[in-house]
Image (spheres, rainbow, N blue to C red):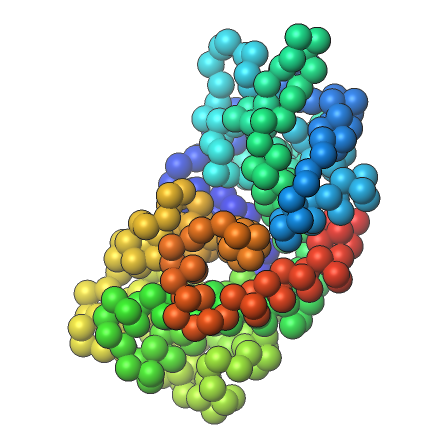
Length: 344
C-alpha cells in the first residue's frame, strides 16, 4: 500500500488539504524567486562530497545519473513575506505527484520538493553555496525514497530487501518494548509479528486478500515458522475488521496488544508507543513519521548504517550485534542501483 506521507497520523494532524493547496499555489506563483533553476541545480550537483557513507554514495550515484533535475529544489532565504507552513517544515518531503486536494498537478511542481533553505547561502555573486553536504545528501536521498515509494506499481525494493526492512522494523520495535515491559520471548515474538504484518502491508499490494498475512512475512525468519505466524494471525482475527482482511494502523495494533498481550500492557496505547520509540530521538517528529511511512524508516536505516546516531536503533544494534547486517543491507541498496532504477 503506497500511502502518502500526508496520510500518516503525525503529518495529517499538522497539515490540512487546504494548506497543501496553499503551498502548491504559493510555489507556482513565486517560482521565479524560490525554485532553483536548472543551472543552479547543476551547480549543487558539482559540489564535492568526500564522505563515502552509504547515503553519500547513493547521493553521488543520483548526481552522476543526472537525477537531481527530477526534484524541485527551493530556497526561502530571500523571501520576506508570509510563507505556508508546509514549505518551512524541514521534516516533511512533499511528493508533488500526489497532492491531496489538488486534482491536476502542474508540471512545475510535479516532483518531490526539497527545501535547501537551512543549508544554503549566497555568495557575493548571488550563487548558492551549500553549507552542509551531509544534510544535502540526506535530503536528496529522502526525496528519492519518497518519490520511488509513491511511484512503485509492483515492488518498491527487491523482495529480499523488503523482507529485511520488515524484520528490522519489527525487531527494533519489539526489542524496545521488551526492554520497557520485560517481555518474555513468546510475548516479544507476538508483538514483533503484529508490527511485521503492519510493515508488510505498507510494502505489499492493494489486494485485500493479502492484508491478513502479507506474503512478504513468509520471507522473514525472525517470526518463527509459518505455523507460528499463522497462530498469531488467527489469534488477532477477532480484533480486526472484515475477518482480518483489513489494513492495520498503530492505533489498532496498540489496541490488540492491550487486549491480547501481557497483562502489564493492558493500558498500552499509541501515545506510549511514541514515547518508547521516538521521544529519545532528537528529531522525534521524523522518527514518528517513520513508524507509519516506509521511506522514512529506510532512511533511518541508511543513516545509522552511515554512522548517524539513533538511540533506539543504535541500542538494538548494540544488544544484538547486527550492525554488519544493516551495513550489508545499505551496500545492497547501492550495488543493486534499486533507487536509481525505480526513479526511472
